[in-house]
Image 1 (cartoon, rainbow, N blue to C red):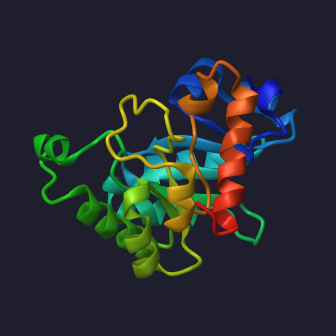
Image 2: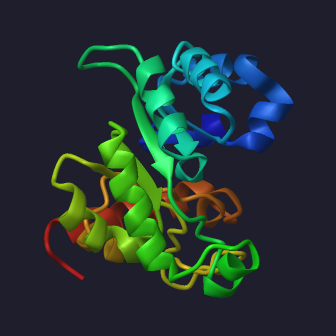
Length: 218
């Protein structure tokens, strides 16, 4: 799949499934295609453990983005920031807000009060205050987060589904054009490409929709 899509996507996202199966060797293999990696492992543990994981993650081949889960709290996120290397060309550190598979009912079941929008906004502001570079959020929260956190704060929505695609387990999703108009810096597109009959054609269709949105079209 990576060989097929290299040159058609901006970055490969490596999550828990692939990393558990292939580990750092898998990243080394991906790096041979010349495409950067978003290491999407959502570290969520005590501060010292997360700091060590982040320190190791940014040394892996090709990693440009790495993330933690904001629900780990202020001390954990500050520890992750402190573990990052310095310099303009270092990988960027993101914080996940509320998973796009969760709606208000699912949040209440685990003791999180309020709406997904309100909680995501609050967690994004906390992440910014801790020195995190940006957040992973649903496309629905992007405008509010951009307004609250400023133009340089990276917004990386997941749950991106081109028009006509299946929602799968996503509760809060949007099309690529909607996400771009809402202020996205990167778009996380998974199954809409990887499970398509023609993944390259699907990736190129997403790229065309992004380009049209950036030109101000629908």
